[in-house]
Length: 463
Length: 142
Image (cartoon, each protein chain N blue to C red):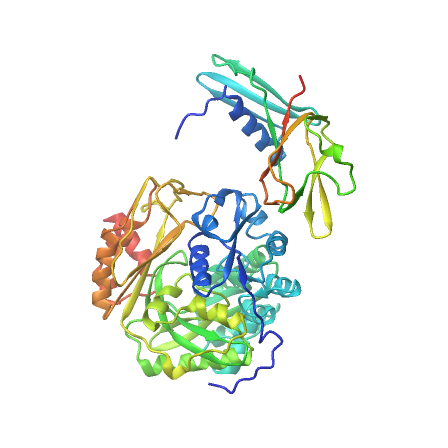
């Protein structure tokens, strides 16, 4: 690890009350971590979430707006007001909503509060895909072939870049993310139309028409590296995850470690991520996302927040990532060295969504009964209970089922048993789909890429 | 899903409040047993018409609940106002200020929103309230 810098203004910030600016399972998860650290919590809610269990369990609860997220969980002023009224000293943004908003991070700090996450400048750097790529190249992190500059407006220059990269290429919005604002170009004839369409989409969706171009990888896996940094220049990577099982760019099943990747290969990538964190002065937890194809890693983006799938890394590393994140925000130095980080056994996480397993339409309503497995090696992160009403206003994630076992095969067997023991009555969930997926032979072999789940679903529909 | 009783004054009051809060001018619901129409007219409160077999029991007063428009600490009156300003029940017009939300040094006035008789406060003075929390009850003037 690097020598402690201890030169940041935020290096010694203490607080005893955390406002959790989020909802659902992650609000409950953060609340648990705060309790374990002896911190008080303030829950915020919209009108739709007034009866959520984590609200009742919090030391303070305040409704900040109507059910529409734009007027509640995305309302920066309402959240800051709630923090002021309740005397909270820090705000944990969770994931989604305002968690990757540089403006929100800055507004929190300007209000004299601690943002439990990176500084606004880090979020801004990594939120812009072009500046992120530039920072990664500078740190020696492997990136997808393509220039680290935005696309020029001159048609001939764009054609030249595409020729140099080699078709197929992908056009992406610099301010995009989450699978939106991108278009694959298989050959030269489709280039200019794809650029025009993506530029307009980027302008409307992200407020900036800036685009960039990369080589399109046809059968990659999605691999992530979890990092943890303090405010003193110390950083470590905690392991890697495979999140290739996706539908419409939304992860469905995640696992740690990523199967079939040589430790020495991933080790060098992990160290490059740590180096990049130090170079941009990163604080807190973060995730580097890569495409992995033919034994090579290609950086795609960094998520400057807690990930939904952080539990699989917690299960294999034994490190409580939310604890570590809060401690880092309190200015404590990292209490582990890279050599202390281990990866024991194998972990899977299934996202249980309130949705129809066949057509994936959201399924809101009353949960009439609920059975969740409780055994060693099984963890359920959730906020639901029998009698809970699933709201139609938000993301359909209602629970995360996580298992840990000595080997991948044993973890699959444990997840099969855990899924069989899980029952959610009154609404539709994707449990039938998850149970079928864990019986799939190719999945059991670890033989999949980011397109596998979509293909598997198509085959099931036509079978 | 349970059937909604369109003749229930409480249901009508909830729907009316929702329309006012959302800035919607009116609502019509047609069911086998009847037809409910709520028209929100500016300043006059809501006008309700109901056609069909079921008729609402308007013998009980249609109580309107004034809700907090945002988070803050509830004050029943301005700090400089005389004590009698807090006296209940009292007649109010839609533009009358029936309380304040204190946010730091700022006092946000809360208008009654409708004419009627301010009968009851539902929040203790200086209590922390959130968006949508009930503050006061207003009954129609007889």
